[in-house]
Image (cartoon, rainbow, N blue to C red; front, side, top):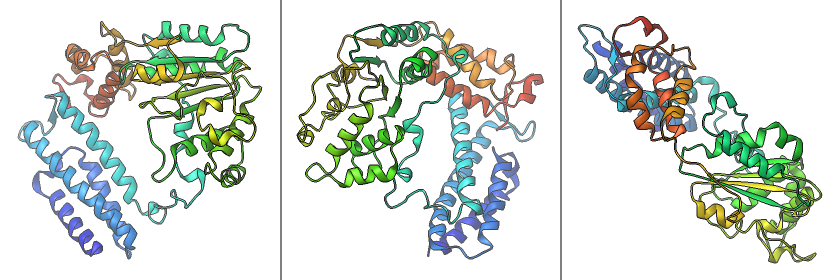
Amino acid sequence: MAVAMVQFLMEKFVDALEEEDSSVVPFHALFQGIKEDLKVTMRSSVPLGTADLLRDSLYDLNDILIECRTLSKKHTDLKQRKRVRLSSMSSLWFLYKARKRLQAIKHSIQPRNHGAVDQNYSSGSLSGDMEFDRWTSRSVDKSKVYGLDDQLNAIERMLLEEDSGGFKGIGVVGMGGVGKTVLAQMVFNSPPVRRRFFPRLWVCMSQTAKRGRDVRREMLERMLMALGVEEEAITSISEAGAGSGGLAELMFALHLQLMNKRYLIVFDDVWNIDEWYQGLMSSGLPDEGEWAGHLRLDRVLPKDCGGSVIVTSRLEEVAVKMVGKENMCRIEPDKDGECCWNIFMDSVTKGGLAGDHPTLGSMKTEIVDRCGGLPLAAKTIGEILRGSLSPAENSEPENELHP
């Protein structure tokens, strides 16, 4: 049944793509490339698992083609220019998302990807459960960051301030897209912080654990792996637990790894108040053999060797519950819009588009207003336009888009 449906959807897609006006549809070349990949894939027998994947991809493909044809009819003068004209940010946003969806479909249906679809979902290995992007911090180009210098310097002073070796907790709060994660990444990777703290761990809290897994167990296992503990050792530690299901043993193992070290841990994008990780500033450790009765993250962190944690959250209440009120860094939206405009320009010109493109200057006020003072919004709008405006258009007198 799935194979028959794939054949039907494939024929529907090919017929629609061969209609007379299809050449002016956005991403026509990309659609054609996907069609050729599909033909190669379907020349041989299609396994049931692959058929299900192709069916879902073809459903999406037909939907996107219909949406693109609707947009083309709405915004194109077929007799004159046969181009999609810039009319609204909503059209740009659609083009940006449609391109991403098509690229994902093309990748998923390419013949070399079949048979490897399920390899990332191993039955029990830690390495297959989640991408390591959650547990590492990407480097940030400081020349492309605007308006965060004061906050960066303030947090560095807090972390590098000489003390008696106590424990520090810092909160970074602000609305979504204002730059909390970027600021934390800049701190995490700054040379003075790198020299002072080792090890440094990055934990993204915004995503839950792999379905069916305990987020506490996953956090502990991943932190141990980041510290160099072998996967087999972690598995044996976890399986050794009885009443706590292995959590107490994992907590104790992590505590031992952090003992006598000046560590830095960033808990990025925390959304919820949870008894498991609140109150990180608390001191005191369970007595030997009593870890199972104290299943809280604050008990894991040694507090006597200069270790520090940074928490980023949209909700100040969450950060306060974790690290207290004392060292709270609040990031406000860009008031005059200049930082957002600079971020937008960096993003939109990244692909070779000239900064003096006629479309850009005429849209500055609208773009700045739509950003709402949020750097992430500025970057996203820049990516949308970068994927839609052709560098070759710099000499064109009219504001037009080439998907």
